[in-house]
Length: 105
Image (tube, rainbow, N blue to C red):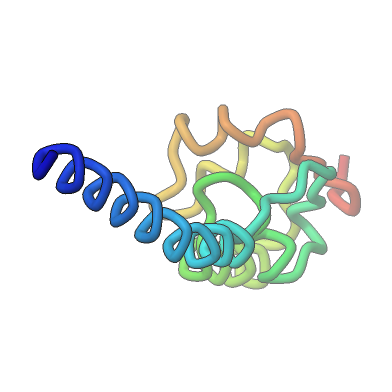
């Protein structure tokens, strides 16, 4: 009988912990940034818009803006890899979203 009571108490404790944790986990998921899947014009996008791309945080977004201010508009999507720290992997993750309107093509 004592074992059944202990097992029941253990199950109730686990259920209580799960019930209390569920709202916290749901809140964390809701707070996670959602990446937009729209096109990003790397010649005109704001820092926030650039950050919507995979692998592009605030530091890289600022580098992109700085690069285009110093060097003029990007001519091709691949030119994004001229920005320090942005390589093939990041480019490949975003290549279907990158546009370069406003370049001298």
